[in-house]
Length: 301
Picture 1 (cartoon, rainbow, N blue to C red):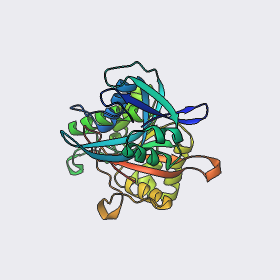
Picture 2 (cartoon, one colour):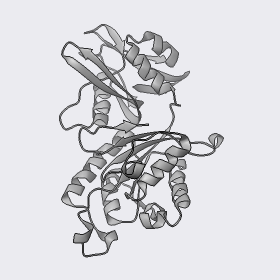
Picture 3 (spheres, one colour):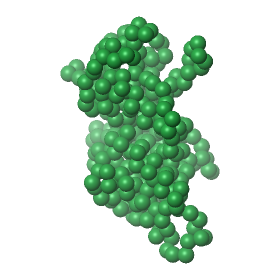
Picture 4 (cartoon, rainbow, N blue to C red):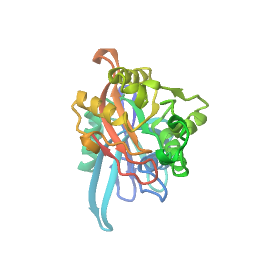
């Protein structure tokens, strides 16, 4: 769902489709080799002319058409630049305040998506928390474990994370100081022409010496602004996400031992309220992508 900050507050983009003579939220079809977030960004641009940065996932909509059942995943998508040119799918756009958009939409399902969007503030801070990609078997590596590099399969996962990150506007890069963690996000740093900040408190060894201190370090990264990506380990991420979700009263998909899941190469898209007025960053929503490779099935809270 495309939105922007207008003169009078948040405005929602509605698209008129001449084929159906309706007003709806922009949407489209998954192309082969795409992830769902990549589809959302591409289709928004193709239909509206605007480039967007994704945030939290809003809602899954299912409905029946003549060709069969349809499933649409909606995301909060902030417009960053662009302009509209009429095209064969959309001949007109309207930017409307939330209240006006609700009454102008042609379908109740789109109104439900709008309600999901307004359930939380539009301006949330996004953090991508990534578990390092595959690095082969530990017992087959003869060197120090912190020097164990990504395997060929891990390099493919890292490339997928590299392509996934810009969809969410990532602008800073951090990693636990292990080769496999740094390698997983190094490509993102290269694209940004920025270094990878090393975070010992978010490695397993440093985190479990004082989990509260490790969690505070992550929240400090959030509070510093922007949209960071942080790469850590499977012994850290489940505790971090489960702790944050527990503090916020959010239910999560269950992983091993009832903790938040964290497969190698997976991504948690975490959305935070940030500001002095609410006591610092706290988790507002969490979407889990078991893989950044094409066609992941996200789960959210």
